[in-house]
Length: 134
Image 1 (tube, rainbow, N blue to C red):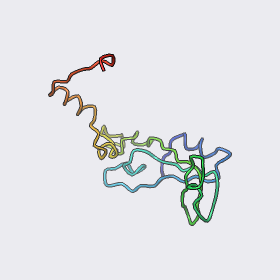
Image 2: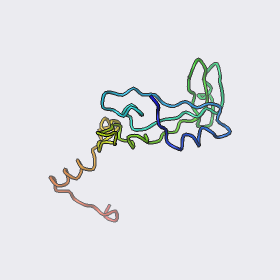
Image 3: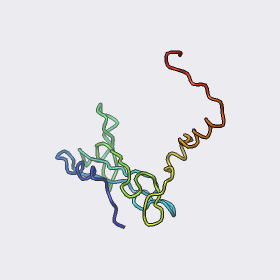
Image 4: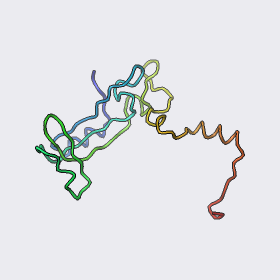
C-alpha cells in the first residue's frame, strides 16, 4: 500500500544533518485508517548520527534518543504529525473521508470528550469560580 505523508516529513527528511529517517508502522484493525493504522498520527525518526553497534543516547546530555533499525543503532529525534488521510481521527468513513470520531489514543486515555463534558455540565449543577476568588 502506498502511504501518504504530511508535507513536513519531506522538509524534515531533506535537512542536511539527517543521515536516515524511519517512519512508524502500525497495523490497525478493520475500519482503522490504513495510512496510520488507526493511531491518527505518523511518527518519523530523524537520525542525525549512526549507525552504531550499541545505543549511545542514554549516555548523552542532549535530548536525542536511540533507535534500532536493520541491525544498527541510530541517534536522533522523533517528530509526530496528524495523518493526512484521516486528519488525526484514526478512522476513514464512507468514500475515504475521515469519520467524526475520537482517536483511539484519546478513547483509551480516560479523558472525556467535549461532548461528554457538556452533557455532564447539563446534568450537574456546576459552580463557576473566578481566578481572583481562588
